[in-house]
Image (cartoon, rainbow, N blue to C red; front, side, top):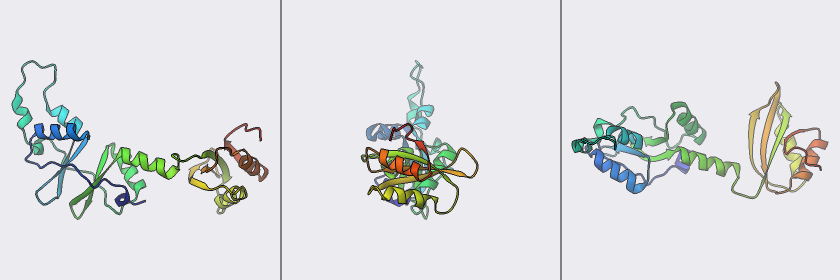
Length: 212
């Protein structure tokens, strides 16, 4: 899946000359945590987080507060070295970028212009969709040899039961030369499938002790 297929195009932004007070009002009104900062041409020049705004403002415990801080320009506190994504990047690349840089969002930029934004919540929801968790289904985890055709062999057994596969993920196995296939099948009772897989010589990691 490409980022352009899931990014939020209805972007709330501020200008570098806007005040911290305005930025705070915008984040509260729209209930958002990140504010891209763009110039008059739509070019991304920085980004603000709700934490940046909180850190720039006086503590609520202070009694002698200088209100002038709220009228400082956004450009004074924004992050200028912004980690971005391109609309044609893949979702998994965006997820890795968020994780690697320990950030909560990626502005999506094409030719310097802001086209959208993708957040960690968007990534999480996309994972839920990819895994098919929102549909009635069951989780299977099968250990296979790390060889070409192993996935096709497992799928062939599942096909015998006229059962659709919602999603497949592949992880390194617990032992060398093995892979774990994490499969969601569109049935709420996978016991017959599990029994067939075991009869075919596959090791079932989950579900265990089905009694089939």
